[in-house]
Image (tube, rainbow, N blue to C red; front, side, top):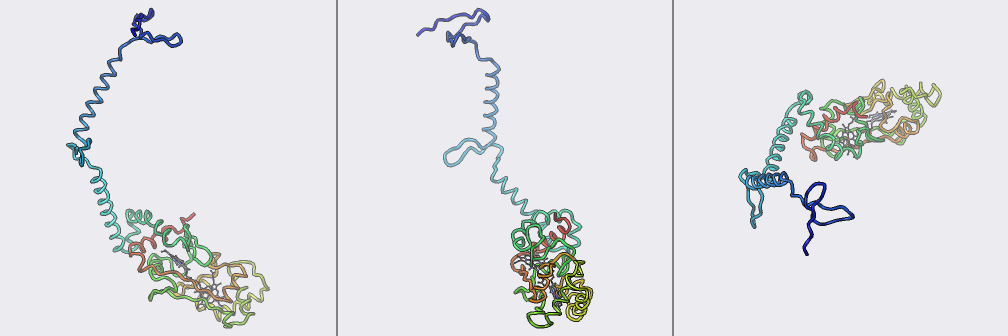
Length: 292
Ligand code: HEC
Ligand code: HEC
């Protein structure tokens, strides 16, 4: 069907003859600039086909003149990362703690790897924030059962406490009441004395505290120290602070002294490498005081 051509009176262009609700379409040419842009894009595409991997050819593909291959790029990057890792892992395994602590690059590796290692192996007992829970010590304070130097912490991690490792640290808070090592009255007195040490108002007469002091000197000072300051050789905690492993209220103190306590920390010697254990020791020292 022939379309009647009309000329638009305002622009002088022919129209296509199509009309929609009074709007008439002009029959103008596509602007040249569009053809030029098309031509440029096509030329660029041809160049890229030649330079880069592009067309499938059955079992293979056109490789391109640049030899670009993202698979080999990834493999090279992985090999580089592994080499870097081998480098710092070996340095951490071999250098003494003091030297590692002075090396910013090694410490940044410790801070990168430490949290994941801790969360995977230790957080179940010591919590992700390292602050522990009842029976599992807080690792962010200045008070240590077994010493807070990187070397002491490394040994605790490696051998454990009361663990199956032949080099395990061993400790035992005796069951003074249950095993009838002291009388029930002595237990009550010494509990009153211990409670008074951390400046908790002693719940009992001061005569109990005085009597408890004598019970303490005779029975407890050997492990906890004359002033109850603790002794890392025995794994005996200080009893003067507010950081309680089991609890500092009178009922819990009574339970501890009556029934005894024996914490178990697993040995990691055969489960974690020397590098991993050193990273954990340094991570714990590094986190001290930083934990929110
Ligand atoms: C099954 C629970 C458990 C797990 C898992 C565990 N610990 Fe312990 N950890 C303990 C207990 C319990 C103690 C306290 C032992 C004691 O009473 O002397 C302890 C003590 C410690 C101490 C000594 C604290 C001090 O005051 O001297 C350090 C350090 C420590 N753990 C680090 C770690 C690290 C690092 C890991 C992970 C590799 C880990 N623990 C995993 C239970 C655990
Ligand atoms: C043979 C050494 C030894 C003697 C003696 C000893 N203790 Fe302990 N005591 C320990 C050890 C080790 C622990 C830590 C137990 C653990 O880590 O599970 C401990 C823990 C405690 C705790 C728990 C502290 C906390 O943070 O929750 C109290 C309280 C305590 N002892 C009081 C006493 C009193 C009171 C006496 C004397 C009647 C006494 N101890 C005698 C070794 C001893």
